[in-house]
Length: 181
Image (cartoon, rainbow, N blue to C red):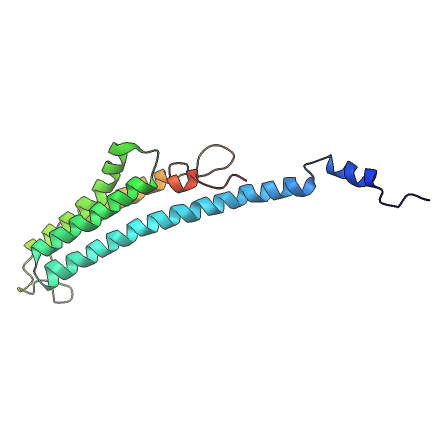
């Protein structure tokens, strides 16, 4: 008899030339996907930290401005900011203890400055309620915004991509555990 059109030798010859074009294409696609996966993980870590900061400022308003309960306000600031610090220690790998403490000191001090300013303001006087009236109820508010702007700058520098071909934010632990295959 005749040999079939796709004899075993010709079929096996194609598999000896691995990796094929489709494997190279898949690896290139996977390399690009790793960047998206890494920045999605970093965004989730930073978003959790920002939510904790937003809760902190909301609780400053509720406890100190609306209900005039300073002990509850300061204790909640400590709880939420220590939770944010713990999450930073979990999420950020290559910044060091001093760097993480310095980075988290900025939003924590901003929350405490806002709380002290809110506590020292006389809310019953009604100063600044008229339109166009210049108020000095919260004179330290610009300092809070400056500290938060510095914190966002530090977060940006922490999430900056590496200089290698992958361009991944390597300072985050979630990026270090990406699937390499």
